[in-house]
Length: 258
Image 1: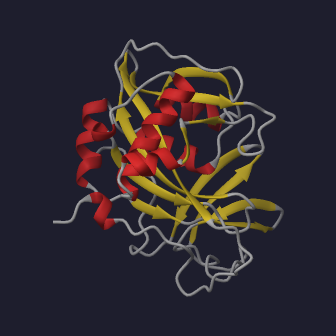
Image 2: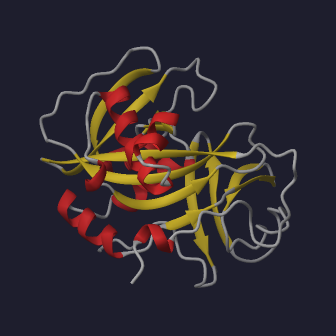
């Protein structure tokens, strides 16, 4: 049986759509969801980016960033290995924590929409860290850090109190169903990661991103009648919608009980 990495084929564009040569290429990147068990259940580390940064400035994020030449060199040119090394490096640089690359579990792969001038092909991993490891931030790129119960982070975002981007929000919603680090790692090792290629759109006064299976995904028409597979921005909060979608396109948020 192929590994999770072998089952994943990151897309360069939606099926059936040609690539505009003017579109910015998606740069390989990786993110790691750092995890520990807390008194209220599964916890993750969130970092707040400097508001002055062009990409995700002011948002709460997981540690991560683009691959560097040293990552490729250490991995001997193997992309999957390089993304693990990069995720560990970024975690150390941004939080002072050092997850082991071999302990990481690939949970999804997101490719930035083509309308963005700065695009990434991002491998998202989950990894355990020592419960009492000291978090250290630089105060420059990262302005704040906090361990937070995953379910609480989702509630805070839904209340308009935690600013995150769609990949972070959907990842938080997906892993909120797990009661412990061990449970998450066990289940995620057994299921194939989803490859996600969102499309930004405006319609009926709304801003949203569509995912495969949405009736308007291929045409880019967000008002097209039919299935809804999208994240809608409502007063600085994202709301995930999965209605009438063909089973070929799975929900990005897993069931309540693993």
